[in-house]
Length: 528
Image 1 (cartoon, rainbow, N blue to C red):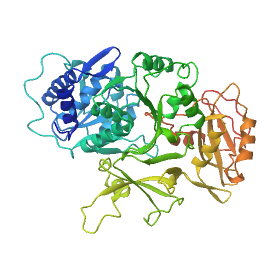
Image 2 (image 1 turned 120 degrees about the vertical axis):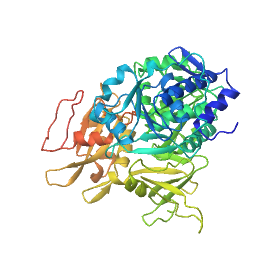
Image 3 (image 1 turned 180 degrees about the vertical axis):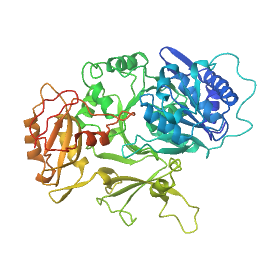
Image 4 (image 1 turned 180 degrees about the horizontal axis):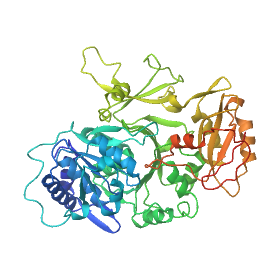
């Protein structure tokens, strides 16, 4: 059968691979046929509780079989699923529930405390434990009266809010299926693949893992823990063929007590990184430990899901290299006047293709600013919209892209324009640092100076003087950090990425704090 919506995808897999295990979690499994039947039952309950086409339904659950069934049940009713990370706080959950104007929240008793916020008070709450997942399939198919089409909204994906309150990105069925098809294509997924799902499904990359696996009729194995030794055991015991992580996850897996670098994983065909630059040293250690595993580096943005990828044969490139456009996608590099940049010239990355979302929920001003008409369409063509990422890159003669940084994070130091990403890359190349965030801080004279929050690669061996000497040797004066904050960890967004906004908020100097403060959990050393 042809696939135009998420419901079509599930129905097609139930028809072609009905007896195959679709999902596994903590020893519990469901075949594609069983998932389809459970979705029908859940959709029936949601319809009886008042969910109609066009409604928003919040899914406040950890990654689980229940959450998977709920997602497909919501979209089967032509409603819109709003997947919320269960690690958020009541204020954040309240904002998403209120801003999305959700008609219902599906959750469990343990997470009910997250709904103790005024914005959630009038929203119906459905306890997932009260919804039958087994038994006789419903006699009535709930999506026939109001058919789902590809242009319908499937989900609102709320951004992490690193530059303000989270915005709801409007994503259609067609967007999600295009992303699933594209990733399944370049990762060469097949029904034999077993994908380990570790990223939250509220994160676009985490949701894509689910859908790309289903597109290929593979098996999704939902990770049971964030503890590195257990992740390593699951990789081996579940015979995982593919896994995707963010940089903090890969750093954790390459340090004790993890056994990732010591164990044999003959089934692990590929691994990939998203959500930020991965240190070259970390990538090299992974490649040496698992030479038979292809490693893909990916760059993307929530508004268009995935934009570029660096294939395994080029993963020796610098951390700032982000590859080239994913299939069926055009990446434009444009200057301030909207003209194409020449090779080597820095410009804004603009994404064109089938994964471009339809805008921001209830925010026409931000939508008009980010989603703009394709500037090179033939005269008289139907309008097509592209995403202006706010990220600056340059491209070489062969089409390979290098990340430069975000325009809104650049600042001036000693009269020179400073790009934090460039300095971070140098810090990470020192091998003394595993993570770094560079930002502008105030000096006694009122001028901006360079500050850096870093996590040592080896805390027991780290010497601040060695890093300062390295910076003096490798960086020009205007790029050298005037203050280095040495932390045990960096704050994270719910998707696991470094929370750059919180770093700057917590570590920007508000008064003269020269000298050295003992480092510890949440403490820092400031060099002035």
